[in-house]
Amino acid sequence: MSQKKTISYNPNYPSIEDLRQRAKKKIPKFAFEYLDGGCNEDVNLLKNTSELRKVELKPSYLVPFSEPSLKTTLFGHEYDAPFGIAPVGLQGLMWPKAPEILAKAAFEHNIPFVLSTVTTSSIEKISEITQGKAWFQLYHPTEDRVTEDLLKRAEAAGCTVLVILSDVPSFGFRPRDIRNGLSMPPRMTLKNIINVTKRPEWALRTLINGQPAFETLKPYMPKGLDMSQLAKFMDATFSGRLNEEKIKKIRDLWKGKLVLKGVESVQDVETAHRLGLDGVIVSNHGGRQIDVGQASVSSLQTIAPLFKDKLTVMMDSGIRGGADVARALGSGAEFTFMGRSFMYGVSALGKQGGNHTISLIKAEVTQIMEQLCCKTTSNFSDFIVKK
Image 1 (cartoon, rainbow, N blue to C red):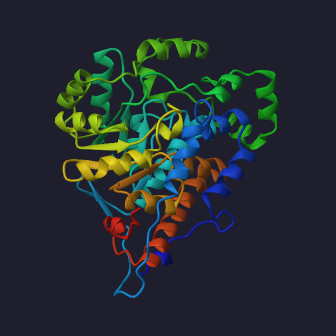
Image 2 (spheres, rainbow, N blue to C red; image 1 turned 90 degrees about the horizontal axis):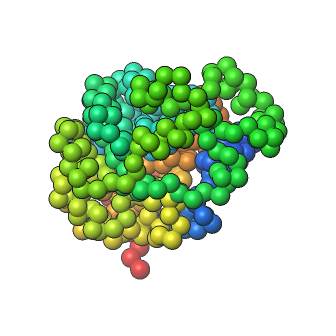
């Protein structure tokens, strides 16, 4: 059966930009700006997508061609599409139960869902929803006992892939979040209260579902911790700077696949390979950490040819829809991840947002493969226009 006949999405929102615009109207300004914004002046945020969209693929129409296949094998598992849902912090702030909604959709569509340490659902809950098929992304605890316990919980939950971050030695300087008093929970300034009253559905669903919290971290929080003290707890509990010694410890503890996320340099990928990691995600954190760097696709184009036979090279940052997935795969990525696109979807359409967004992107990738006469997702690089 043709894949395009089995893919369905809401025709009222046939693009990621449609979802973005609807999300902007449905959630409070402080939540939308946290999701949508980058750091400093947003230079790298905008460059990620603009540079990616300079990538061109050339179709070959008059060749034998049959139905394209989106199926992609990654770390021994065959997924139904060449993209997954990237880890995003504070997801429940944007829309109540967002991580659960997206994990369920990812499981139903057989694509990877990556749970962030600092999102609003627990390892155990997401494991239950995905039958142990989710990935886990680890922020770096200052205490070894917390690291070891988190890894034991992830292993017990069935996670086979652990993602560790290299691009958060410090938090990005994000002017919008500073102005909005973005914390967990958000500081209820008069401006934020007014914004909430303008979004009654979000306010009602948040009231029904309760104040979002860092569910995975609850076992490590002092009893009776006031939410106003949470920032101090987070600073004391986590150290974002990664080094070889930390990676070696994690590699010794974690028996599953280990992926380094946030790499932009050949040197860092060489180190990851030498330390026995299984893959890297070329990424600049969606333009949220450093504004003076290069677009992630530019880093990918340097890294992929050197390491494609040594470890699995993936990419996120700047990828919005199916055409961007095709461009990234054509540029050398073996797999792709998106964060904002799926959060726009769930913020716009609630419980239907995950299924809608995955179906939409599948449809876009399928159409591009049919136009290119590209049979499999590993063939995209055959159509790249070299410049």
